[in-house]
Length: 360
Image 1 (cartoon, helix red, strand yellow):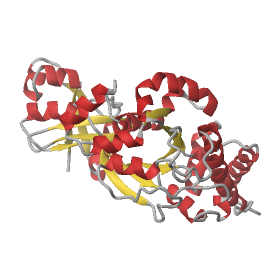
Image 2 (cartoon, rainbow, N blue to C red):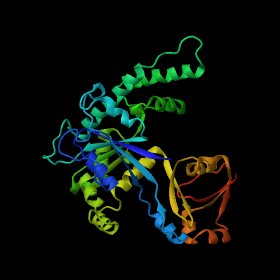
Image 3 (cartoon, one colour):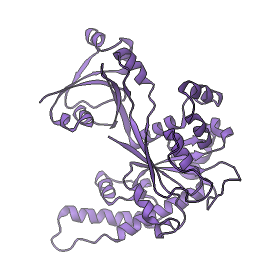
Image 4 (cartoon, rainbow, N blue to C red):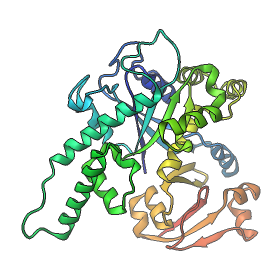
């Protein structure tokens, strides 16, 4: 299962700088002028997970494969983007295939960076959301009411379309409205941008990164979002971290009063917002973290490793991460009765260490 996040915002708010830092390499052009990003940049980053090296030592392997997250750096959107302003609405289409939107909002004070339409985080978010809603409205206006002996599902789909038009007509993003599972499926099928889950990266001055609690408490009500959707980040600091060794990164973070990098906090926020979690596998060949949706059963989780595993699932041997580490591996876990054998109805938990038994 892939986690993909579109990095979205007005020009010159730090999107490409942040993108480069998250991927730890200069793949996107970061420049002090609008529309420095023309084509969307796409890159994959590892999700840091402190549990994996511990498991690797126990399993006797040097092969560690963290969960992955794909970031898509979208060209800076401006007012009128849905009507072709700036680089046009063609770039809105690059957001459609992603799992979530990360709104990068400018809260740093550097006067040398051209603002290019950026006013403040609240106004900037309103501008971007408006363009996403207008793009969705254009999509919805193209839908046609089913006529004659239409199938029930076609009529139900049209009801969803009418509801979406009403919500957007009231100036509200679909992500803030209550949607049933069937409505969510229709929104996904139509590629509606304002229906996507949102997280918010507040790009602040270097001196402010250690003030996350205060800044989140200040901006969450202003932005009208949940505090746990906001990540306080300094793209400049993340750029500096990107070129350091792991040890030096930890020392630098400690000097700033932080325990986790921006990537770790952004990934954790995305996982929580999207209802994701990880399970772990640990063997002599490799240790690995796998991303799944909360509520997935063991056969569904096995299918993330290989689609055939869901069909041929027999059982799952499961240990908690704590037990696995404390008892130093599968052997003692089995001998001391800490191993659970779970069937098809077992619902996976965060941090389960799993060994799937698969038939032919």
